[in-house]
Image (cartoon, rainbow, N blue to C red):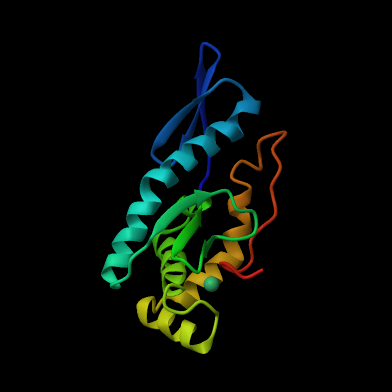
Length: 164
Ligand SMILES: [Zn+2]
């Protein structure tokens, strides 16, 4: 889980550590936007490549990948093969992130959440039960990465991967 840690300020500058990356921020009010900007940039850099690697491993082709700021879903897959991913996926353990990516990729083979769909997910991602348990338990926290910073508020928490 992402835990921002305050580091002593220099000349009025403050720094927040976000995993291995240090972020300079001006003041408390800037913390949330600085962390979100940083994570969104990481998401845009890392998620499309990971999705394409997993697609290739499963013999699938993704038409388009978009990184979005979804409030209620971790991802979605259009009937035309375009996949949208929530930038907050970069805050998850790799195995959970991969489950969400594989879940969306399997929708390229089966659009609905049918028995056949879950069989495909199970074959491609045998750890999906643990991953879904993690999402139910910790998913809501990802909407409050800096909830302990005064003035920051959390948002709605997704429940399923792309079920409403
Ligand atoms: Zn789904």
